[in-house]
Amino acid sequence: MKAPQDIILTPVITERSVDDMQSGKYTFKVAKDANKVEIAQAAEALFQVQVLKVNTVNCTGKTKRMGRNVGKRPDFKKAVITINPDPEKGKDGTKRKGTIEFFDGMF
Image 1 (tube, rainbow, N blue to C red):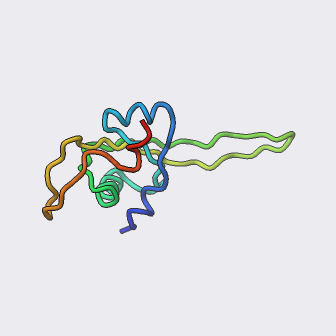
Image 2: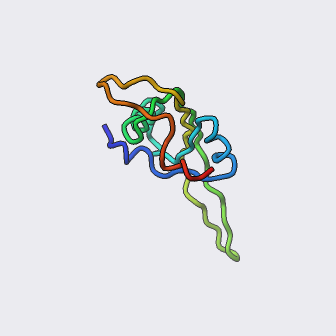
């Protein structure tokens, strides 16, 4: 099993992702070989939230040119994680949060 930090790599900050944060949806770049169950477990471990749903998208990298040279940006996987705004307590009795604090100052 991978560590949660190896599964959830970086947040994706776009206009659409910032608008979705108000409805409890957070967007992250994740490891290409991670599945939805691993992503949900990693989010619960890292942010102490209750995950309701995970949607994933495999994104292909753009082809870029500089003069006659052609290159390609790397492919990546993106996950939209929906969390419960009023969560129950965890299985071990720990209190869960209704938002991810990293994003609280963004909107």
